Image (cartoon, rainbow, N blue to C red):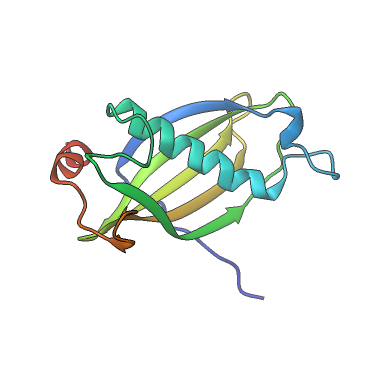
Length: 142
């Protein structure tokens, strides 16, 4: 069976740490696979907040919508672990940005997962994708 293999770009945009909560644990007594996507979203939100935006629904008056996602699971994580979540810049399109993520255990540097999301810029009133706001592009390309 072929597996997803993500190539992480070189441009690191942001890093944050997230502690694994008891509600993140599944019946196997480790971090649930669905929580990796949640950690990726939290990392992306914190990145946008670091740029001065309140949330993902108002970036220079434009919202975002997740167009795709991929996750490469690499290791377990447990309640109380602190996960370093790093966000990297991938392809910049006219209407979307690819973000890549690396999640590692802070204590032992063990790789937990790699991920990718395609984020499109979206006008929720018009129900259509729109161009990336120029002010955001300027901030991301610095």
